[in-house]
Image (cartoon, rainbow, N blue to C red; front, side, top):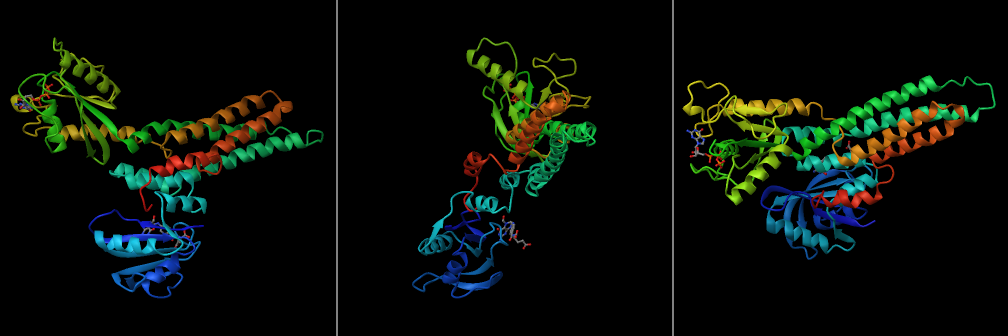
Length: 428
Ligand SMILES: Nc1nc2c(c(=O)[nH]1)N(C=O)[C@@H](CNc1ccc(C(=O)N[C@@H](CCC(=O)O)C(=O)O)cc1)CN2
Ligand SMILES: Nc1nc2c(ncn2[C@@H]2O[C@H](COP(=O)(O)OP(=O)(O)OP(=O)(O)O)[C@@H](O)[C@H]2O)c(=O)[nH]1
């Protein structure tokens, strides 16, 4: 097994930078730069030198002995000053140590997976945690990293294994007088797992929104103040505003952390009948994006006809509050009036929906759970046809069990790994 190394912190000026080394030569390599033996697990301040004895930096050297490390291998960390030149000098010196090579993106985590330190769903959680930019994303990713999905899958797997064992006992003792009516218990086990899988599968959609972000479209007539509102919420001039109706034509997207939730706000072309071909294209695009968005904020007076279908949870805000005497439900991007109310409304609606998010967060999870349910449903209906069909039912249950195992990467995932690790940053 190669010994690999990489900068684990991000490149650039920083207080401290961490260089990680993992593999059989990790401790020897750290000792070589750090001037002498290191304890199997510990932390010492060393003067780091290259092979000619020239000083590189003073740094903390941490050692972890296999298997008690992040990767499960011998690991050493060099915690050095976060200097661009200092870090490159140390990385070059490590590159000259025979037997060491630079790690590929995600390679440390890949080893942690191979050594059973993390399951596949935890690896996905780790990737999400590193990407997390809002509180909701952090919580969701941390839950996954802690192994919540693996725990769930393990519980279901145990139930299905018990159900399969009950069925197989009937097959094995078919000629003998054993209490053969195992179907009530089997049915109960299958019903329970089915209900859990149904709930978890339904929660993936919302969990995906938290992972990827919600789209909130601002729509209304030309000149309603959509771009001004977007800029006020974003806190910067993301979109051009003008008194000229029909200013915005493309969809302008602004990412923001809205009450802990990841939101992409969309500013769209004002909706009206127009002779202008380019504006017309902008309006068509506005409708399309507004319809596909998770939530629509209509800048419109009560009773004003809306040109995009209203859906439950959508919000109507009256434009240009500063010109109104009756202020309820009105906002102004120009004066800031009503913006707290609007942000709270959007936040409340999206967090209500987020409550239905499950632990599973990806298409891959949904697909595995759907395969498990298909096997389980097939087993359940085959069981009804009587004991002569039990072996086929047991086979369907084994398919369901395999699908659950793929959730945490116990089986069938070799071809997925490259894809999953490709998105990792170097040093992770
Ligand atoms: N300096 C440093 N900080 C870090 C990490 C790291 O690798 N290095 N981590 C990297 O992601 C995270 C912490 N994750 C870690 C997970 C496991 C082990 C580890 O040594 N596990 C052993 C021993 C456990 C123990 O001491 O109780 C094990 O699991 O056997 C270390 C860090 C965040 N902070
Ligand atoms: N009094 C007042 N004027 C506003 C307010 N918001 C925007 N305006 C003005 O209304 C005009 C249109 O504002 P925009 O934000 O460009 O409107 P829009 O809805 O994006 O317009 P289109 O791009 O044409 O669809 C500009 O002159 C703004 O300064 C507001 O809250 N109060």
